[in-house]
Length: 481
Ligand code: G3H
Image 1 (tube, rainbow, N blue to C red):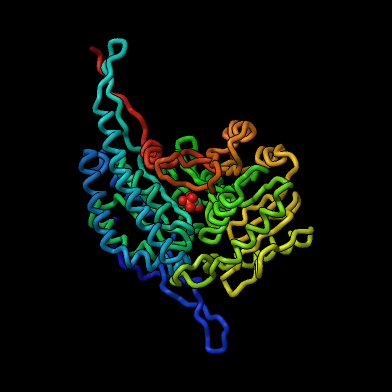
Image 2 (image 1 turned 90 degrees about the vertical axis):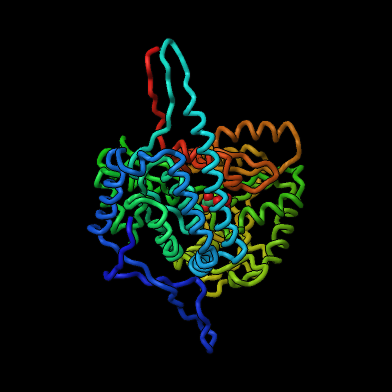
């Protein structure tokens, strides 16, 4: 909640954009470092958040909605003034193209403005009174307490703020741990936090997750956890809380979204959306299409067209104009993807596009694999990278059964014409996943749509409106007439 100098150990950040030596080899490029807090320091940040909340009697939770909105508006003005710096760090840390880094920033600012407007609506509702059975009730939205937010590396700014801003504006105090990749870009925000919010309201905990987060959770003082990441991490964090029934968890987790391509699909539309859906930001999106199930009558045609479009994608550095495929920030990912491809090939799949799966350091050229079958690693594992598996079906029940058997339940895409069969499919699949996209890729936006999932894919719901509800509790002031 206040700016502190750090003299302890630090972690160097290596950019995925390696430097090329004169002999052509690649050399790691260190672009900065961040503090490695220990448990004791993390607990000091927690104490600051607990004190600022002060059992709901702190300055921040007691402010009026209008006053909290004013603070968030001030914060937004401060970060907008630093857009260029934040976008540059986003690009250098996670390899997101200039265009997409700018989009991430702008989407975040739009999200904050939309949140403010949504809260004004909600506040108008809570100033209404209802009279029922002789009792005058005023329904309010009250904060939960101390919220720990942890965003993912693929949207380190946007998906941190989709939790942090709603949590804050509802009157909670917040701790947040920046993701492992996408940490430096939060530095320019620290001064803005300190200037816009009272002391202790926002506290940034730098460090390795396993060094700082267990102590926070084990303290029992975290009232809500907002995490976008893996279900494995979410499960272990929840177990660390001594009273997990008191912890509210709002989680966006793993997904293996399927695209079903029906025999009567418009293949131009299907292929265009499939390229976007599977390979935007190198496939590093929880919402990415991670398995294609195509009717056998059109599978060869679909795969040929898909491969032709992938061949047109431009690999390069994120600052290159028109670039589509960029270096991956997770150092172990190229090896993992190579394993996945080799495993599929050993079981009969072929790489259908030119140069698919070739690498240059952290840059992996996308691989379209066909025919993919049960038993291959890529059949069930969430590849979270530029590997695109395509399987075929004779009967659409095979695709439905795959989704029913899956541990995931986020979204699905269906490509097909307006037929009764598609209508039936939609009705079946809305009971399996949380969003069915018709002739369109899977995606989170528009940000006013509920963003959640079934099974291991989510807990609670995010969106401009839902996040305000998720990070608050409905309370009633009831007076007898
Ligand atoms: O990585 C998961 C994100 O929620 C994906 O968001 O569909 O807007 O790219 P997006």
